[in-house]
Image (tube, rainbow, N blue to C red):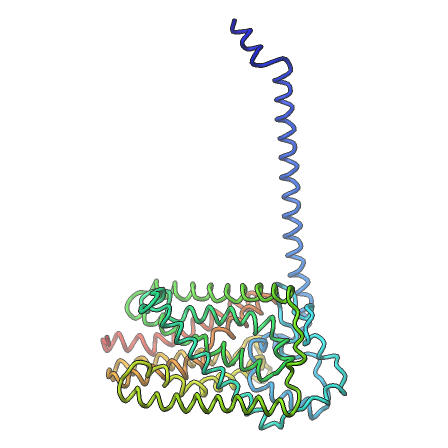
Length: 449
């Protein structure tokens, strides 16, 4: 009886067909896995080859050019004057080799890629401002965009701080300036790397204003370093270390995402910027007049409001006082950036090291620590407002994260990860150690609260 039931449930040939089906599935599965591994290996090989190709291309590029990609300071004015005097066009500019995803940006179609091969007759038709007026135009653009950077940074501090969203604070590794540093690094991937050639095609003043002026003032390294010193001085050493490491990781990822996002936009959307190019005398004059009027208006209003609010000790005193002293901070950083790519000593050692950006960040961090100690020593409300305004405006604009992270990103993408680690590590460690000596030691010895 059981035999009949078994035969009924399993007709002849069923077990053979089932075994054959299982064997075919196993073979198909192995083939699929093998093809998947082959495809993965091909993808990895392509990535490796692209990086090797980038290394070969960038091997012939002077390391000083990579150091100046983030910011070359007022050297751009001197270089333009030399080009005008010599009636020649330098074939390799500061940003001639901006690296994106392991490949130089010169592969992408942009106006910058065609500029070096333009005929001198076309270049001579473009109006050039006199040297002094040209220099003043840069300072005006830096100031106006610096104001916008301070406004944005202050707004983001309040929005994400304890008073509203409460995502950042002075007591956790998520410091108050983290959102502005993230946004500035993200935008630096757009306008400081991917779209920078297009901006330069429109106006060099606009390019410097947006990258060095706005994003350099939107982000602040000295504020970040001071918040970590505040944590360590209270004994929260792990929070301070976590804040530094987490902060470095976040801003580096922010610029990477910004570059990838901007590259996607570049591939999908084409825009002709020739009609917006500022290359005539009338256009130069119009832009300078508008920017100068904006500068005077914002500066005068900031001075008036700063005096009134500091006198009455009301809200907003820090913001308006910060705007008053913001332009000198931007100018100082831009002037120090001329040292990028120069090297150290007569033999120009370490030309790959952006010494100008390094000095701006370290010096601003040291002064930030010193003013914090003075604020604790004096310990009055009015002095606290004044010193906080100087920290927000002058020192916040003098230091930068956007340019710093752009330089680190470029070093990594150009095949020099070791240099990127040395540069970023030295900036963070030197600033933190000096800040500890200037700020934390007096706080511990004098028992400041």
